[in-house]
Image (cartoon, rainbow, N blue to C red):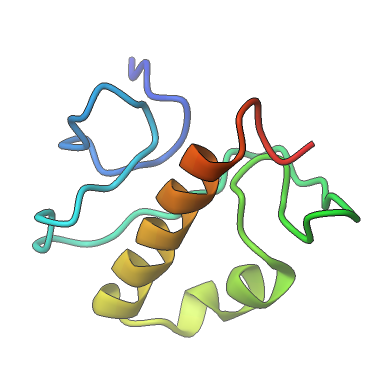
Length: 86
């Protein structure tokens, strides 16, 4: 059973669960969805996965490089906002 907070690639290894590192460029990219689907009006981000509505809607049609780019944005959002997007 996985102990990861979300569906981040299992090799995410900076100690922060649910992060993608820039060097992780191979293999399929898992969705960052955590099944906590609640949009924060102030930030415009989902409180579970940190994506915007546009990123959530587009996810299924993105190729892996574009998905990695979204993951990197999510990592930056997490680092810039202590305690989450709430």
